Image (cartoon, rainbow, N blue to C red; front, side, top):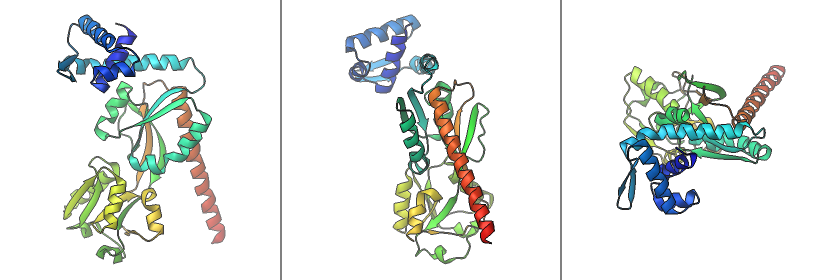
Length: 309
């Protein structure tokens, strides 16, 4: 079994098209076909079904895929291990709110310091994050949770996100001094998809108190939720960083929540058995520096506040 065969196999599993795979790995289509055929003969099982122009993984192909990914990942890590300067790919997954509102400063500084690292952001699907860390498809995951629960993961706490229940200023609940969980009975809620950390906290509060909202509309985009709040379609639950501008401009009203805290931690996760490449190490160091800077600013603010008192 050759490395080139595994590389072509991985490309074909992603493209599911022989022509595009050939272009991606810089060879001709006949060579892709020959390499896959040789790999299938060596393994003694077909890895792909060719149904006309359609290409799909067989059951054997699906079983073989994670092992091929692990082998290629180990080889790539070995190549980077002998290079002291951070370089090569760095694959990260992060929620839209963190990617949009927390990471740009980190990424700008990282790009300036380490121009040879190829950062790519992958889809943030809660149910697949653990397996993608294990197989090496992802190097780092930024996730919103109170405490990372998977013992296979190491973590670095990045931030604590304040979570607001929001309404447009004309909403009846916007005039209340405080909002209790029971006040959400019968209300129209605009929420992120099930599995989101802070959405799960609200779901738990409502379930424990047997409170039924009027209707829940789920979104994959926080920006879409904001537009629907502006249109008066209901109440939303979003991180403070996402709605800071709208709150300053009085487009939204943050309701005074009188219930269990919905705030949540943001953590950077990686697999405990994964070799921490120079690129991963450099990214984590920048995260640590930002955390320390934020903590220093908080301490300074408290000291100045105490003198002002």
